[in-house]
Each structure stands twice: as structure tokens, then as C-alpha cells.
Length: 257
Ligand SMILES: C[S@@+](CC[C@H](N)C(=O)[O-])C[C@H]1O[C@@H](n2cnc3c(N)ncnc32)[C@H](O)[C@@H]1O
Image (cartoon, rainbow, N blue to C red; front, side):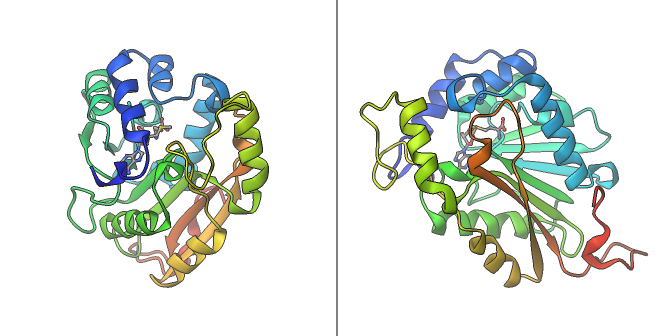
């Protein structure tokens, strides 16, 4: 797989899938790496995060939703109770297998974020949670975003990218990772290490949106039990002019605004 070049994350996620159980929410969160260290989060906070995603994406009015980099499907687990079709893709075959066994009622398949296996204009909502920092660089991220907007229904669909490492806080975040995740030892540098994270300036999303007739709306990550929360942000991408039949509110009709 292309995204594996230059880093070791695909190996990590393949191993996680091999070791995982296809149980309930707790086991899916564990498989997706949200159980320990800098990645830990309580189940209550997890469910609150799912609710926020549903509101920002206006899922109450959507027919379908795609999660890019869904892993074992821990975030799709609560969303699949909504009356809409849930889809997920992930580049780890073993995690996709766990998701398929845990949730036979939804559609999960193996694919890279930069090569989504869906026709243009398929989805009303797309999100990606805790994934973009594993991308090798901003060029890959730009291609993944282009794919996400390609599969969105033009004018109507919206995309939510969550848990983005803030470039403005990179030094503080890397210090925190070194101390907490690696105990200060053998720390792989942010520039070169095989377990590096990619950081994002907000301008990356603003510029991407401007070139596609979209708006980028930023909001803080605010999850009490999640140690990385202070270093991360979220962005909602939506079209400047809403083309929902009968809607005259432009892009400003987001639920929860
Ligand atoms: C921290 S887990 C998050 C899983 C899920 N989104 C959640 O919130 O529970 C990160 C996931 O991103 C996936 N991933 C990383 N890079 C990817 C890529 N280029 N294409 C598809 N999936 C990717 C990994 O396989 C892993 O499942």
C-alpha cells in the first residue's frame, strides 16, 4: 500500500487487527488504539464525540455516511443506530475484518484514504477521526481530501476531519509525546522517525476549501479524558452554496450552529 511508504503505521494497524476481538465498543476502541497512553479516552467521552459528529454532519437528515480510516469501526458503532447507511474504509485488512465481524449490518472495506472505492457524488457525509496524522505528508493528505470531496454530493455533502495535530503546537505536542508515549527514550523524531505524526496548519484546509467552492470551519478538540486533545483541532468542510432542494440558507444551515 502506498501510504505505508516512509512509515511503519500500517504494520502497527495490521498487528492491532490481528490481536483484536470483534466484541462491543470497548474492544473496538482498544483495537483502534483509544485504550491506553496518549490515545486513551473513556467510553462516555467516546459516545459524546459520536454525538458531536452526528450534529456537525447533520446526520439526522442524511441518507448515508462514510468514515475514512474507520479501523475496527469504534466510531461507526454508535452511529449505526441512526437511520442511515454506514460505510467505512481502512487500509488495514485485519482491522476491516474485525469491523465486518463486529458489525455485519454496515459496509466496511479495505482501501486507502487517497483512493476511495466509490463513484463521484455518493455520500451526504464523510468523516475521518484520528487518521490524518498517520498520513506520510501533506501531499498525501491533499489527495485524500480531494478523494473525500469527490465522493461527496456536490453542494450538499459535508466532510468533517477530526483530531488533527495543530502545526502551531507542534513543539509542545512532540515534547508531550516524547515524555508520555516514549518515556523520553529512543524517541523517533517528528521529521524522520518511522512513527512520526504529520502536523497541519489551518491554512492547509482553508486553501483547499477555497479552491473548491467550500468553507473550512474550525473548532477545538475538547475531550476531557483524551490526553492529545489540547494539541488537536477539527475542521468541517462544506459548500459555499447549499443545493439542498428548498434550502435558501446557503452553507449556514448546519445543525448545531
Ligand atoms: C487511531 S485509528 C482510528 C480508527 C477510527 N477512525 C476510530 O476513530 O476509531 C487510525 C486508523 O487510521 C487508519 N489509516 C491510517 N492511514 C490510513 C490511510 N492512508 N488510508 C486508510 N486508513 C488509514 C489505520 O489503519 C487505523 O485504523
